[in-house]
Amino acid sequence: MADETDHITTTIGNGADTAPQIALISQYVKDLSFENPNAPAVYQWQDQPQIDVQFNIGAERVADEVLEIALKIEVKAVAPQGTAFAVELLYAALFGMRNVPEDQVQPFMLAEAPRLIFPFARRVLADAIRDGGFPPLLLEPIDFGALYLQQAEQMEVTAGEPAGHA
Image (cartoon, rainbow, N blue to C red; front, side):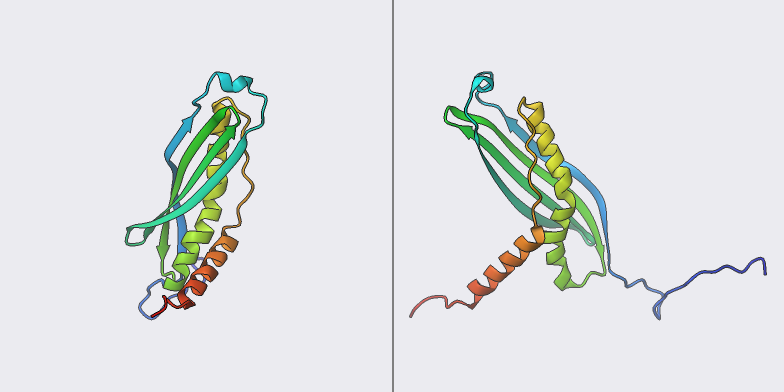
């Protein structure tokens, strides 16, 4: 009786593991650029700059079961006197995916993966701006799921429209 153990074993007929699995392998700064073109005069400006933030999501299969998701964030601060600063960050992560249904891959790549890595990219961006001599810019959280659904709806509407008149 000493060699009895309590455990649960789940196997399919051939012993293969068929459960969907996704794992974060690594995350990293792929590219970071900070420009302060009007230093040192910019530190004397009294006007509050207008902040423009743009972002884009890229996804690429880098191996059979590995995807790279890249979040590109561009921030430009412009005052009446000129550009205060410009930052461009490309923050990426590798995700391992196994046994994920094909119809679930794109929603993961464009909604869930960016949601997971955004807080880290946000910190890198805030630190770069602070290290450039400006107050850190803390971006508001982005609802990548809602953006994905909005984009999917727009694609459906566009696909349903006639191509043109004959």
